[in-house]
Image 1 (cartoon, helix red, strand yellow):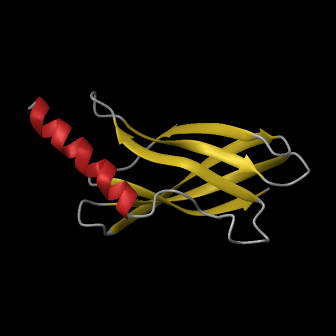
Image 2 (spheres, one colour):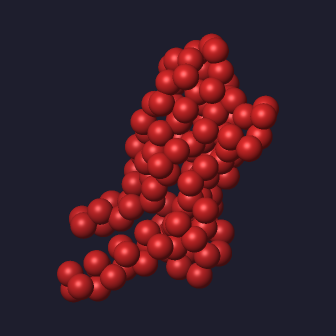
Length: 118
């Protein structure tokens, strides 16, 4: 059972990397106001699923942001979305975020879809 979970976890990590689970807005966009860095989708040994990462505020002002995350099944088919709210991000600050995925069991991967600066 533990070998199956380990194989599944490795598969999920590879799947997330293949889905481009790195960033929503990148440094390539001169208008980008934020960057999502170190984005990860992880299934913990107890079965909980977590999305986490860091949000980098590229502006000179404090901001709040809402990260839209797309969730996918094992065949890379879209299942649903979830939102992660990150508050009080100072200028040039990297603010970590972590949120439990509250969706059905078919979710096996995640990717940042967009970031809305509030």
